[in-house]
Length: 422
Image 1: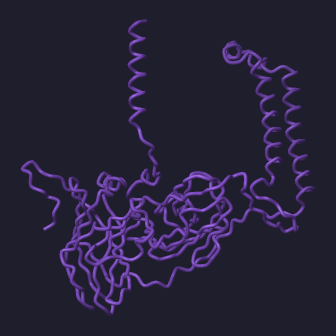
Image 2: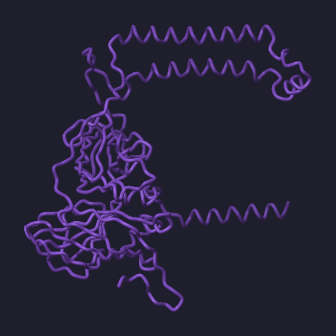
Image 3: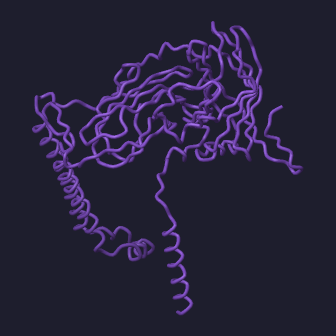
């Protein structure tokens, strides 16, 4: 007893000490997704949030673009977006979605996105619950799950008691969508819960497992259900049918005009946006584990009509910026996804029109670890994907796909660093 008491006291002290040193952590659920899903499926860019603080009942929008990876980069084990839905990743119904669009088409329904094409999106939201909420763009793909874009904390002020969103129905009735049908929903849930509970209680108060098992073993299984049991079962069956019919008749009388849930596919044309004006051929790519650095040898052919320079490498919503060239759209982008000095090129001079150049590109930042992208080296195919942003002399941005096998490199026994590509 004394030993048990000492162990309990010790455990309590340890837990108290641990609790005293813990700090509040804001979890980013997208990190739980495998790197190949985030790096090789949907490449998000130009994502913006119209507001970072709003009150209950105020509106905001999240907008941006995404490029669906080409067939050469798309994971073989992942379903393609033949059926997808633009969504928002938030911790519960803390916002009310007013509408969503892709390339100007309403996204009330699901749609299909083509591999290798670019689409824009916009989602309008209304503040519903006060708090500090982490909001992501998200694309739900059938048989593949959600692909999450960049996220930012949005603060909602005020009181939920003040939330009011009224709409006018097809029958010219004004309703509050936050409370509409709630009482009726609770009533029917309670009716069926009581109905089911009564049925369970009827059997739970009778001898259950062992006595019935012994009767079956003794060949008396046909005696398990008495005439009274069968009568009760028949009454329950009739009662369930009656309740269903009564509920249906009541609903038809109360809501004579209804529309079924829409299941048609929306048709969305991709943006007329030129990509791969700078053609990229990956010669070799390595991930240097100790330095948290990706090193790539690329062959770039400039098919545009002006000189270009490499300004950014983006993958899994993380942006590695070349400080000697710079990049667009960094203002307002989440800091934890922005490696402003994370990209270097062995040759930063402009690539002339028609010129083909082979050079080395290094992307290095702690984001490889904090975003769990380094675990890519444990995947069976160990491949990556992303976008390279080239900038012309007039500031035009040109997007180029890049992807291929990524070889992990460790420090060997003699201390030689094998992470650098020669």
